[in-house]
Image (cartoon, rainbow, N blue to C red; front, side, top):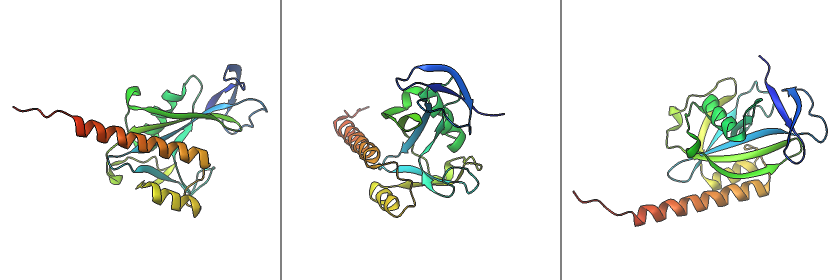
Length: 183
């Protein structure tokens, strides 16, 4: 069954026009895309290696993500993609919007979610994902420079890494200031 996308104008208003994935998006129109960056207790991000048979960037390490299908908002699409590609069930309140951006043919929403699983615990969608890896920020930067991890752009990664640093600081503060229960 073909994947149908809703189309939006430059101001983010949904148009009546739809298209089938793979068709050319008319100039001045956009679809919705999402990225999801699982993060674990040590502040590492989960990256995934794209399967060799996918159309876009086969064999390259990248973010979990995809496109919203007709009727989905970005959060719903992110929850679906996380489950399809990694087997992770998420509730809306567990997903944290990191930032939104407009790209050439898409409005992109980037999410993060706390996931503390071993790499072997993920259930990979073999048609899309060949492997996953927890990756520190320095390792990610090395992989970007060497062309192993897709480069979404300096401002993209700067914002993502800033979010990670704030996330780590918030959780350290809460752990440090948590009152102990005595029974």
